[in-house]
Image (cartoon, rainbow, N blue to C red; front, side, top):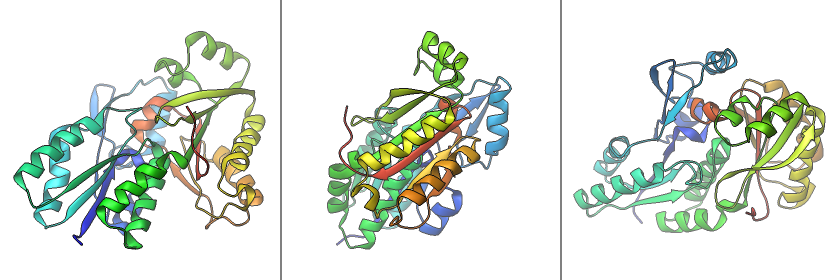
Length: 295
């Protein structure tokens, strides 16, 4: 069985230390803020605190997906080492970067005919994408071959739930994910939308709630309804948030109370600068394994 390397994109929103410890190479998306381009390098070029402060002060960052050349630079050193590659991309429902990854794969497989590159569309985002990468690593350690692992991920990726809420709708309105009318009415009435990533990997607003307390309760309720085994859920639980760790902590505390069999504590990460360019500050996201996601 050929040795293979798992790789991913920065939008998996896991800490730099995680990628270092697990030896997972990743490629950075980019964002443009105040006329300057920065890599989405897990808070190194611009600390998350500074990034979200600038948005709160009116900055409007835009993002750029990974191009073919960047993927070539990520993949080629691995192939030169004599390893195959299992690469997970950000959801195709959110970004077209998978197309660039596939072009790089085709070019490199021509240059290295004895090697194999498999690209898996995660249909995931932020630390939900990170959680899928984490599971790919677990499956590799359990002895799954490159092809078996890719097949497992494609068969199970839509069981990885993503639930989000936001207390600041500004960036969602600007990006067109929430209509202007709904957004401005929502802001005025203190409405917090509860959203999820659907089976096609797209972010969909599902319900609206008055105030933070209610939306936090409802988010945890979704986990009770959808998690594998209900409150007996024994898998991992990841979260990510954008400059609102206190809100994320409230959700995590409730989850740790209601799901006593969790595999470890709830892991809270920061939403990175590319996903954060679209959510802005005030977003809390929850990820867990459960039933099939719907449209």
